[in-house]
Amino acid sequence: MTDIIWLLILTVCRADGMCVSQEVEEFNNYNVCTQTRFEYEASPKDGDWKNIVYTCKLKNGTQT
Image (cartoon, rainbow, N blue to C red; front, side):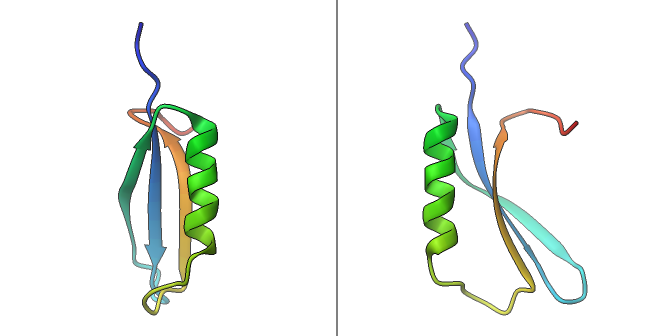
């Protein structure tokens, strides 16, 4: 059986529209990923970013 791995991804964008993303953590459970996302979203923001977005996505998944 293949394990389902969830990734917590951080995406930040500058005012000029340039965005970068990075993996923050891996999880075996979507609910744990979501709870951790809420914790990160509640933490103080660092830097001069226009947008800061955390998302839980399937590892090696595709967007539909």
